[in-house]
Image 1 (cartoon, rainbow, N blue to C red):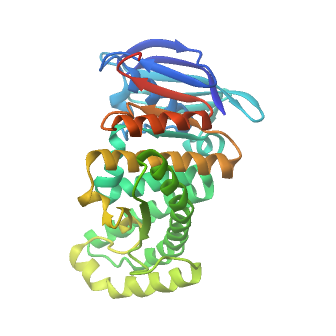
Image 2: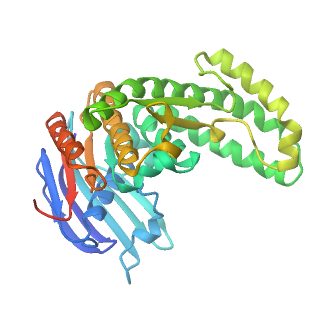
Amino acid sequence: MYIESLKLTNFRNLSFLTLQPDNGINILYGSNGSGKTNILESIFLTCLGRSHRGAQDIVMIADHENFYRVEASLKLENGSHSCSVAYQKGTGKKITIDKVPAKVSELFGRHSVVSAGPEDGLIISGAPSVRRTFLDTYISQFSREYLSRLIDYQRALAQKNAALKSEQDPSPFNSILIPLGAAITLSRSNFIGYLSEISADYYQRISGSTTLKLEYRSSVCKNKQPEEIDEILSSFEMRIQDYREREAIMRTALVGPHRDDLHVAIGDYPARTHSSQGEIRTAAIALKLAVYHLLRRERRSTPVLLLDEIFSELDPDRSSALIESFSDFGQLFLTSATDS
């Protein structure tokens, strides 16, 4: 897929903007604060209904305005389609596909987009919640069923936590959480299995040395990789029983995919604590390019790729190696502070 046209109204610092990008490489250059990253954010928002930076809708409204609107024409395998995402203070978000009201989940089933930027270093060095969000955002593009399970799991988890906080019996929610959580755990583990080899290859190509290793660490299946759904279900039931008293004391759910993590190692050491900023940045880029590769292979559709200031903190050799890979991509948006 690719973006045929883009129209922004009252979006961050861009009061009005129209673009007709090329279906190949598009370079956006300008000084810091000129709005380059905001354009990338608007494309991601149009494709998936949310900011790739995790921003709330209200902060994406331009100063002194009460709404934003992003509209795009997208070329998909079955022809051109229009999509709009708008948010107004007091009334909320409205999404349309070909002028018909739609839900965010419908965008995940139609569009595919991958973004990479300075904030991605937190996938490696940040909190486990950042890595879980990374997994959930991109697995949901492969599977709307995964997204549906995730939404249902988060709803039941909130209900269980509310019961724990009010010292009520949380066990009725376990029968909902266990099958949903087991399916989410297996999907994440399988995704990491697919991603591991491809991301290691990209890391090797860009860095020219060392290896990148990924491992899914489950709070349910301790010290082993989740592989079979029945095994995960059994482990989940036992772990919840083991943690029943502790959850009552802590007043929060302590077992499930909401407590899991993605372990990233460069060479033989944890990247989070033993890697330079350049290595962390390279690893994050390798992960995103691997996701792009997987989406294109499994969805049989070429995603839109958004690359925001990706050369910062990369030495010239790594930058050159990364540029050589650009010919592998479809529509690409690249931001830079200069036109060189």
